[in-house]
Length: 271
Image (tube, rainbow, N blue to C red; front, side):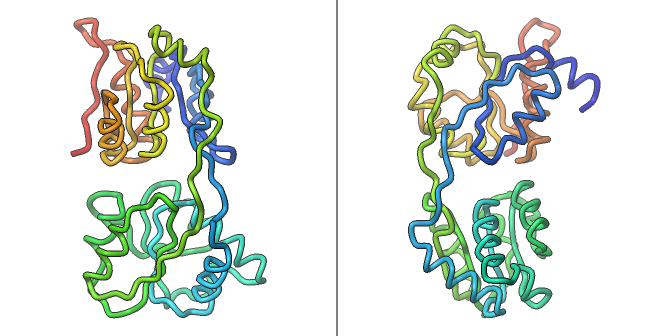
């Protein structure tokens, strides 16, 4: 972080969503002097159809797919563990088999699993971005998704001529959520900013904190998260220009930096 970024963020109180195994953003902000309230709004649970996931993973590792389209690090992690248990790796069918993915975290998970990524959307870093940039079929695509994923990726690729095998790789379930004390602090304006990292986090935050003070700034990691937050009745003050942790940090600086008129600054939203 730059000195200016650290100066703006130091001492700010920010609510940051985490999961049991994913606390990178919270740790990064804490190291910059942010007073972090880390909250597990969601938890990641194993697939409800583990046999199907094991079969799909084995088929991928044996080279039976032309592509894998993956939008979550949780899916990559679940498949990588199954591959290791079977004595192989997700990288086994490459370079013939190719991978399309989105997002900083998922790219990192692919790298850890030994996967070379061929396609990262040039436009929106979302499932729709994968569909837009994917070549026309024919061929077979594996789409390991979470239980809350929309069918858009599967349907979009099928319209482009691909045969798509969709499998549930993990489930997003309710986490412990936030304390009554933190909810009260949000209502009282004692929290400077709230970070929303997914639509499911936004929905659970809205359900647990109906009263958020006007001075508390809400920052979404991307437009789909912002839309989910607004649909849940939340006011979104900024959207990260790039859907990544760097983008979130930049957006936080934008809304927390004092402007010349004494009001918080604003960040440019990703349209």
